[in-house]
Image (cartoon, rainbow, N blue to C red):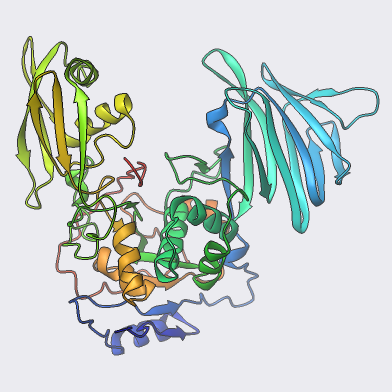
Length: 482
């Protein structure tokens, strides 16, 4: 039976009105034992202060880092841009007839295609779009790959020395909601509406929570150490619709943005955050029985590893030395491996299951040891692993969310199921950029005195009874396949 949406949108003019709504609105319980979120729009009293919308904000993403670009071509595909560089260019107009070649040099960049008769050298170049229809394309001409991608927003180019050689640093200053849609297109390829919307909320929350300090060159990278972002490449209409439908919505725990982590499939039970990453337990990242994850292609899997090659890979963990074998020595209550003891020439060395898994997938690939929910046995010159799930297991299971969506659950119910005790909130108009918002976040995950975006005392969902011992650990790990 298809379930109706349980979320409620309330718009209030002040914090007092918001809290009155929160305290007097009962949260309906669902048939599977969790409460759906209510969606509240929070408006900071602006007096006569000029503010700008959350959705007008931008994030700074370093793009094509993995290609180690040394020389690139920049072409305007639609619309127009203005170009500026220190001491050389001021508001130079670029249109579709423009194509620039940019080379990395020690401490500088060399630009060709702007000045008649030759190029020039400068420390940086900034391109700003004129209108929302402006699109540029970056093509890597010299580097580790010949990638080519199109982007909206602006672009800043400079150079830095990496491994003894100059490399271009390409930073796309992209509108937040464009970024969210592109991340969802790359990170969530399942065909549903509500699961896609849930992913949009998480992508937005993760992006804002992990913003860099204002003086940093960029906030995120475009690969798995942040969230996968490919610009306009593969951008789906479903992801765009999800970003627009959830525009400005984020997940909070006691007034602070959560660590909005996700993975491909839980194997039947999600993991507590501290069982995977070092750090204190976060009340909203508690493992839950995932009855929706058993329809995925990763519900069960097997992996066979050559013994000698595997042991050599395990020797790279810390100072393990020569590894002769291993034993599984500890599991969590949900059956995940939490500790593995390596049998070395100098004695036993105990490592975490996450260390063990990362060493294996660095050698054999992401689709080898797909999760820490596994058993292992030696068979002659091989080790055979049998397991369930895909990814670290913390937070939202994408295949679980997909199955919930297929059964008719709404995106706020999906988020409430995987992140207990959180609030789904629409951010107010911003009086500052996301960079400033991130800088005003305290180390405890609570809003600091300077952060005026969200009230200090949003009550937690009553479904959570855990004591708040959360720290500010930022598990910047890949959510799919790691």
